[in-house]
Amino acid sequence: MIGYADDNAGTILRRGPLLDRDATLQLANSLFPKDKLEPVGDGDLSYTCPPDDELHIGSFPGVSIVAAKEFAIDRPSELAVPFVSRGELGTVYLHAMHSVVDWFACAKWTNGKLVRSHWCPN
Image (cartoon, rainbow, N blue to C red; front, top):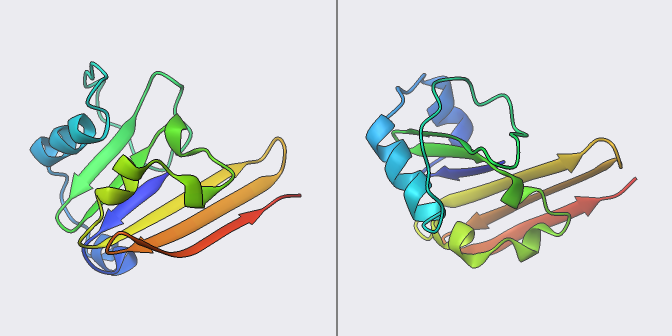
């Protein structure tokens, strides 16, 4: 899962922002320009491991959250540039884990620069 935030993501989300459907569709198309994306309905973003052919995404004022297979990488510093560059003027958070083989990875970029990257194998 990846998050894009203009400010502290936790603070923004605690305010209970409303989903911006137009911004969500625009973000999805900008992150995955080669894919033909179709809305499949509403859900919640707590399901962070969608099937390979699905993207779970929500864009709210100040913060966007995206869950997709492309973010399940064990070396977060190697996240594809298009996903990182989207957060050039804010913060990008990456959270990835695979409980079957027992690893966790996270990273943070601020204004397009890697600040922290951690991979924790079993």
